[in-house]
Amino acid sequence: RSSAASDVYKRQKEYQVCQLLLQGHSTKAIGTIMSIGYETVKMHKKNIYSKTFLSSQSELLALFIDILQSDSLEKDVDHLSIHVEEQ
Image 1 (cartoon, one colour):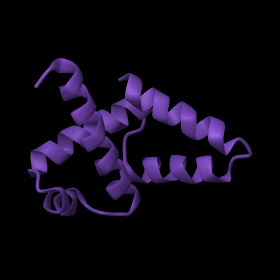
Image 2 (cartoon, one colour; image 1 turned 90 degrees about the horizontal axis):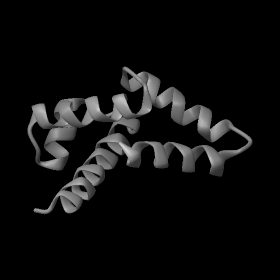
Image 3 (cartoon, rainbow, N blue to C red; image 1 turned 90 degrees about the vertical axis):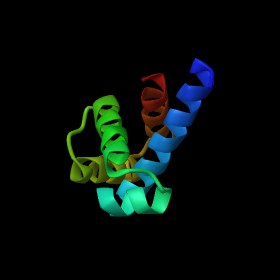
Image 4 (cartoon, rainbow, N blue to C red; image 1 turned 60 degrees about the vertical axis):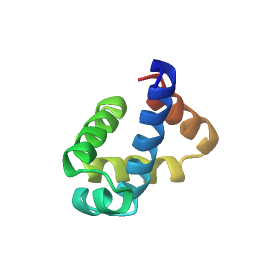
């Protein structure tokens, strides 16, 4: 797999993990749902938290709620997705 393709694949997996975290799934459940190992899920979570400057699932959910409640929803969501994709 090329480096660019690998980066896209990794971002897609991180996005899936992020969605499942926001749905309240545990690390173990995410691994089962995505058919990946526990340590792989932990790596994706670590990357997500690093890219968003967060340190927990509850902080990720709080950020998501803040974005939903903000007056500039489109701008904030675009900013978050750009920030995550840049990493």
